[in-house]
Image (tube, rainbow, N blue to C red; front, side, top):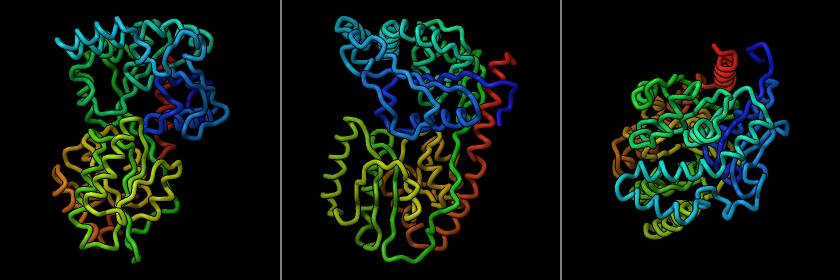
Length: 408
């Protein structure tokens, strides 16, 4: 039920290759669009990519999608906006990079902003939204400083600002500060954004976590037990190789256990998949460790699993992990990973360990050795996620949208 007095026109702006990605941002975008459309609001998603279509995740037919690149297709030489930057501007960027990575990125973003500023103006003028929710700080920069939109903008953070903001281009810092609101996923992130972006009006709204009636049974006795990881294949951040390495030291003693890695990726993900397969062969784990690809219904895999392992280096508010917890799985993660350390109660909903494959293996062993611990921690993880139920989170979002539109 809408908390305000009228239906709003809402634009979700994500000037990336929205339709071909299956990550957390794309999922949040579709979930938010669906939730706001179900509450009677007119919702549009505006993206920027050389190909048009429907996204990976389910999207309500009432939600309209607009591709900025589709408006003048002859203008673009590459599906990706970043690859459309001219050769001269790329040379300038690389020269600047010698002296300052931040200045190089600032130049690159200014080139992209100039290329799409007219398309942004045309589309926003056509839709005439009451409010824009920007899914990236770069997008906010394009909206506010290149297209000069007069519509209120809310900038979302999907990653820890501690990771994003040091060295960020001045234009993006300014865009965050000038947004009507900057939304963060963890309360601890509020002072971080305020420190880096003086004047920013920061609010906390976490991600919505589905609540499942059917759930995993990690305490059950089985012939085969499953450790699951769900994340895009990404070596610097998701670090699935650490899970494989950790399991390699346990596999011989636990022949009835298997590891399933669920997730896809871009070109770098394909290269990493090859590396992971080589690692699996190196440790002779072909019959115990499996790369399973992408799934639109990962809950079906969680229900059959016993432990969720998440060796990420950094996160914002990991949907895969929290959904696994909501499905009743205990988690193994690193103490060093922001968000993971905030969302796992060590010894109660999962096991937190020091960084490194050896420590990760010790954490896995704690749960692999005890059906009782898996069952108890899984039940407590499920209970802990009730505080992030979608209805409550979308109420928070709707209230915020109404406040901004009403000028409160």
